[in-house]
Amino acid sequence: MNGWLFFVFFTLTYSLSTKQIYSEGSSVFQKAYEVEKTSTLLSIPLYENSLMRPDSPKGEKAAVGRLFILYKKHKKWVEALFLGSRYSKFIAKKDRDIVWESIGSLYEGATISELQTAYQLVFASKPNQFDELQSFLLQNQKKSILDFVLLIIYRKKEFELGIQLLNSDPTFVGKSLYEGMYWQKSNSDEFRIFLEKELKRGSGSDSFQSDTSFLLGYFFRSKGEWEHSARFFRMSSRGKLESAKSLFAGGYKEETCKAIPLSQNTNEEWVLLLYHYCSSNGKEFLDIVQPSLQILAKREGKDLYSKFREEDSQ
Amino acid sequence: MNRITLKPKNFLFLIFGLILYSSYQMNSQSAFYNLPDSERIILYGDQDTSALFLCSQDQKRVFGKNSANIKDCYAIGGNSIGDLLGEFMVSQHSTEKQVGFYTQDSRQIHPAWIEPKGEESFLILSFVLTREKVWFVQALRKRDKQYFYFKTKKDSWK
Image (cartoon, rainbow over all chains, first blue to last red; front, side, top):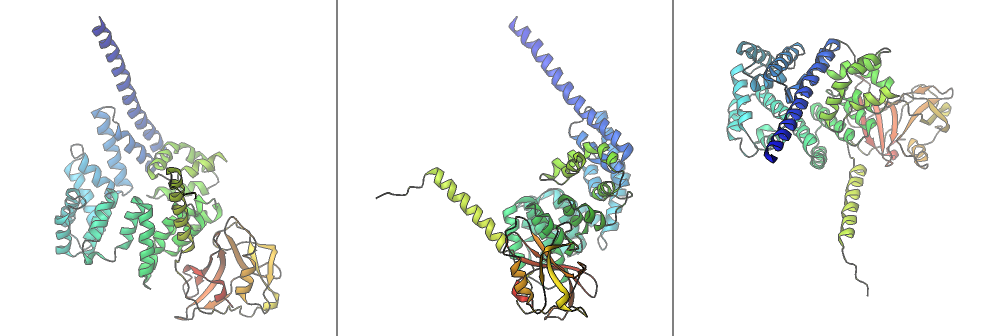
């Protein structure tokens, strides 16, 4: 009798819990579908989340299919590459080849097959185990391949691997921007020490100044010093959008809206969000995309996205 | 004789103190892009310095284009700018403070300086005094309007 009761209890609990998971996955998919009607770009984080708990193989296939189309539409080639590798059963080879061709056109001087080899070697590497990757890079001596490798390592969040690789050979010097970005994402104390060393090392070159200013922008943002952060980002050739983000976080609306050209036709989430933040009738848009903002905010950790919610409630 | 024993609680206080100290050090040593310690003479063009003022600003904009706090202005006249900047350090402030140049009718102006090394010419947007009482200057390089943000010492400015 006790065994029978246990069986009923177990079956009920199991069916309830699985139903909850199933409905969670599909409701995220539904939300993504709803947001996609307003913004294809901002539906992407929701589709990505629905893949974390797919409700069924069919649902999983549908989410992968939508994501692949959206990545291509918004030229998110590295994301498309990762998706193609992970879900090769759902994405035809010819579609994956299109992604590689697009990536190849971004990295002049490297062949697609060299980039593919580099990509595989990154996936086969770990901290303290990257001899093959290192030899490949040293044999090729191509800046574009090294740039690609450092980007893939960053997107894979293999920060320790990246730092070790960059310090493994003097050929890799001059890549302090990447090393700084790896530290910035992985260890705030080490990031500060790295910055101090860089500033002592110094260099009058424009690229050193631009890269170091960019990293300083992140450093002061992490401390919540929005004004310092916006100024250092502005000093960097690559920091204009980040400067606008720090101005936004500090509540400097007028300067945020003048900092960069804003447009609806963009593949950059922040440009789109700031476009609506700065337009007089943008509130409705920001309300609709709230579920995406919540996901983006969670991913960023100490986030800036949640500021849109604070703005909204004012 | 009383002995000081390092109880776990005291040890925690010690660690906390060290962390606070090291973070203060980072703030105070923020030796980012120091302007070298040399004398800089500010150039006002055809403006008469007896009709110009150095004023703290309202903090509406980060990049220095702000209205003057007319209650917190000092006449430039024949004074050294470094001495006048010192006046803004007297009062306590919990946020940063920006200081800019203004005419008698409260119009903001952007005087220039020529950097001794390299002889580049810059326009001053504003001086920034941080909470830690460190001075920065934000400026535009004249030839290409490139923006710069330098740490500086008040006494460099004449």
